[in-house]
Image (cartoon, rainbow, N blue to C red; front, side):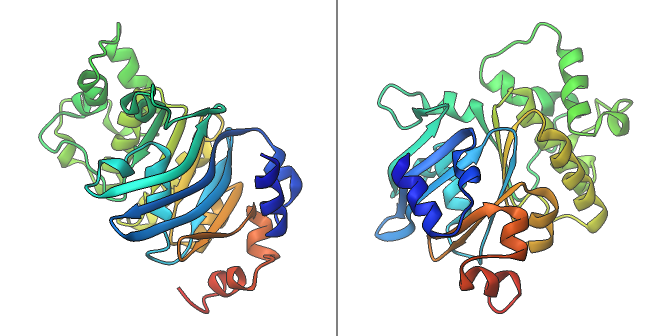
Length: 270
């Protein structure tokens, strides 16, 4: 890890941000789609039970990066990755590692809410478990627990048999978060979870992220500088597939060390 620390120091990151306990970390991670390289030697810690925001312009590799964290990148035809990703200090790309198990431990919430539209709210929550062959002993208690964690229980507790597709967009996204949480992940990846939501629904998701940080390590990809500043403890700025700068969020947004970071967050490009 010393080389990683040195590289991050060179980018201006505070030493304590690097040396803090990392739940996950990328080590010289590169990724391709066919001949096109999307990520270039990314080394980045993801601190346990903190929120890390990944920011940067479109096409800079943000979504590719988080898809590499739970091995979803490799399901795309022609996609490949080199380097490594560590979870609790162990490689998720080891020859004996089951990618399905990785994806249970490292859950994903996508940009567009994707509940099963004709399936009930209750069955949407339980869908991931059932697809994994898991039969919890008390499904009613589990449904209430994870919908409560997703700040949705009070809104749907009397309509659990209602189709998931009948909920509002913000409710659908929180239902997808509940479905993810039902699998008891240790890390939650969110790929622009508010991009299709109105300001009120966005505020609820941001409040939810704040509440969940006490239980989970969270990584949020976002185009919104304001959102990243509001929800994250640490922020990483990506540009052209490279990690330009990583530090505490307040440092990134008030005293960035790289002029490209300052240009991006002040709206000079992107």
